[in-house]
Image 1 (spheres, helix red, strand yellow):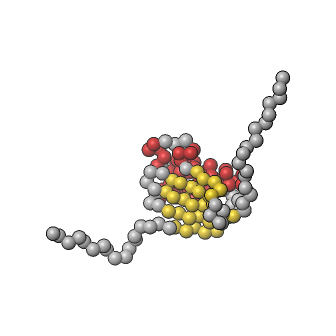
Image 2 (cartoon, rainbow, N blue to C red):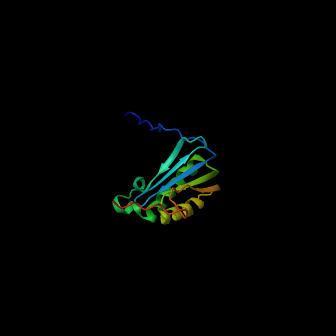
Image 3 (cartoon, rainbow, N blue to C red):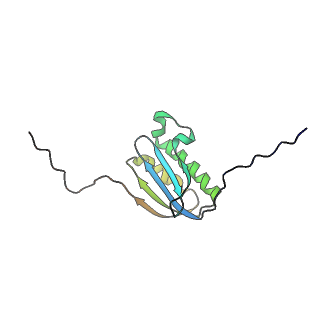
Length: 130
């Protein structure tokens, strides 16, 4: 009988001590990306990757589960400190994702909210009638 060969994974797990987590949360989905300080993507997660489909992807619970999977990946990599960058209008999802990431065991240096929504400021001009 021939011996079975062990399967070796083709992807190498990089050793990264610090990096950035980008959270893009809109009304229908939540995308989580971990990059090193140069911007190279190391790990990513989303509710669709965890197993949620359709309208269930837009729930805060699905985003929390995606963040838990990202936490698991970051523990395998050996991350010690991160900066968190937030974008998008999905506020309940962002809150649960931040809570889940805070329980990851690494130091969070900064939260940066890069929303591109006007808040306050000048009211836009009305269109003239024809």
